[in-house]
Image (tube, rainbow, N blue to C red):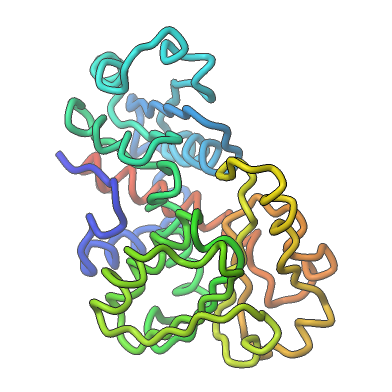
Length: 305
């Protein structure tokens, strides 16, 4: 039995196989309509989510399966004090596979220790978000045709952004990758990513505070929102929340082939006037997320067509 708790739980070869399967699902959706017939996915979401939860549910329904679960801790027995370990023991009696979103780092890992079904980490605190990473990788590979020889800029909340941490960890396994890390001092990339991932793997990177000067050099710009829910101080959030806003004027400085990604939800860090720019692919990214999660569910359940 396999779990997906970290994007590195999949080898590069396994990742390629998942992305190849996702690409085939995109091209031939009818072929997969009953592959999960009589299978159940449990979505255990202890904090709010729109895209990730509905993407998992759409993925399972598209495969002919069904979905059970809850969308907030308040609507589960966690509100009565039930532990993650006990919850997953119970859910293992009901479902064939589980996707868990939790505000505490490491909660899906605890669940996996006690689970009798595959557990997928759907985001744990500011730690990891592996299925978003697979989505990002499919978006880049599908639209750029490669996952190597890229200069990628991450902009905004790099301290708490679990999507950023996961994607950096996955991309360093590919050749000739360079990162430009754009953030205010207060939201810089954590030391463990800088030292244990970037420096340890001899990956070239720059840390800058200005977006404008970097745009011309980027193949990918990965924008993130400043996450209010990760701040303990409201004044600090208000001071930083609008530190980077991508506008049509700024996009004039960007490479004509640069792609703009965003894990969503967007607040105001990307102006709506950018949405019609062909380089803005964050809504395509959402669609790729369904294909990736379909492929991952099949892989972890050992299903084929």
